[in-house]
Image (cartoon, rainbow, N blue to C red; front, side, top):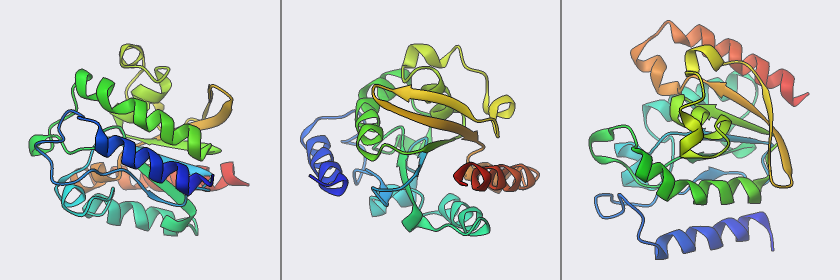
Length: 195
């Protein structure tokens, strides 16, 4: 079975489940991009545009991410993008522990299927979850994104080894223009990691 077929099967499985936030959302936001990608981006949760279209990173943050990808000669077809949560929290509020615990087994399955070389965690929630040993409990032991961004860490998940590379969430640039330089520098480091 191809990675695409495995991901399609996982998506169908999620649609059969009764996940938290499903009833208050319009669409499942499973993921998008190349299942054979070396880079997997993990964001926090779908926003309003993502919920409507059923795809991650299609709003303003998505445009920011596209720009940063192009700056290192990559595009969406070169990467895969998923989120901690598969459904949008009401009013774009941060995910709670119960929601993270409920949704992340499916994210872990996505990682196992894609087997990326690099996982880029965008923002605090995905960084803390992945570096905290893929557990909600481990999240509180992990520093914040402002201390961790741009620093590669080797991790493994069962039989897969990969580099975790935390970054500020592209949406942060929309509110704090000063972070644009930091993100540009971090994307240049990703380019180096790929060589």
